[in-house]
Image (cartoon, rainbow, N blue to C red):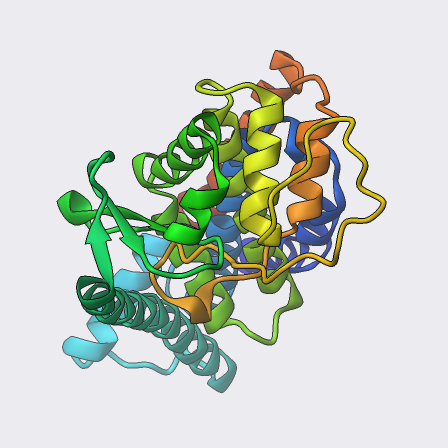
Length: 329
């Protein structure tokens, strides 16, 4: 396992810095947001597995030729009192670091989930006091506020879409359909689970700049996915107007209208997909509008399959290095 630990460490470094930076700067994810989302998930999972695996294989190297043998040897030492003379100080340190990092990641994941649930519960309690069910749309609450607001609050069978009456007064029937379809796409595709995972990654590794890049990129991708879903219900110009209204707080002009005298945009509202504002990132509305106004052709099918295969390979490599007996030795 000696060389496997070095290979895992090299992979962890690649997935922690250059690969996420390059992906966050790439232009193709806007042409295939689902494919890019799968790749981001693979990078996060493979990166975490490689970081823990590198330290684990280094620490277990004197105890066996593969992970199972090494863990069996460690089990004998811890529970059966077998001699630990083969383990040096550096191996004990590596094993301790792997255990601490793994526990830290799991604890942060659970703590983030608890905070999200607590935030949703408080948010839902406030909505019960300040909102009314929509008379025309099921599973939709309306709050009395002049600022255009639209977001979804996950909760299984209790999931709701929240709109402000200010927004309802600005939207046409088709624009309202676009907003509702967009928000319901977040719920149907369980985007809140993705945001939870990447929010936890950022919370666990705040010193890693790429954790912030990943969270921002995932936020943008889920908005693209929801926009694409809305395009099945309404035409592109209607969706553009709806996005602009929600983002700017003012009614969007009709195509070809004179916008030279338009005032500054009103307040912007970031969607609270998790029901907790502290884990939401401001979204690049200009980028969304640009993507809708100047659509590019989808990524060719063979390129999508190539990215999906790469995602699978990213997960397979650290798993193989951990489990294959003596692969590089």
